[in-house]
Image 1 (cartoon, helix red, strand yellow):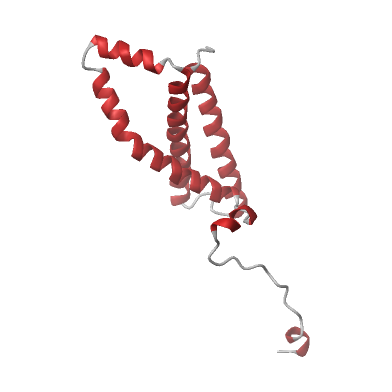
Image 2 (tube, rainbow, N blue to C red):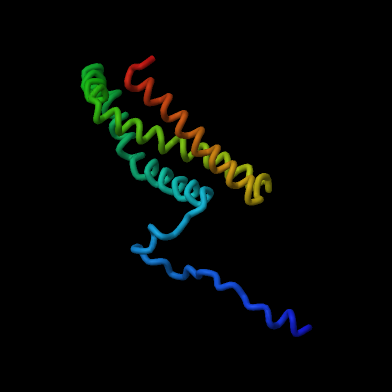
Length: 140
């Protein structure tokens, strides 16, 4: 090896090992990482709330009176926000899951394609959630 190659100083790169919770605000997460974390959060949200949703569904189909009672509860704005959060969780998880299926087929694995697909997942899931929100709050 020539001496010119050995003498080239290496650029010091920051090393992030064992990131502490207090350092999370300084860490720049790529868009694909954010979509991955949101995929996990939305999956947990749906999994954790599934027993509650099934129980409420079972109570609502017992009789016409119980259905009317739950329809009254669902018309409250706070309940609509909870339903909107559940809709976001489902739509985010679905769109990110489709993205992961394409990645399992080895499509869009390079850096630019991954960034574009992550941005597309965020845009589509937020757009669909906005449509659900508009419908839920009676705009159309």
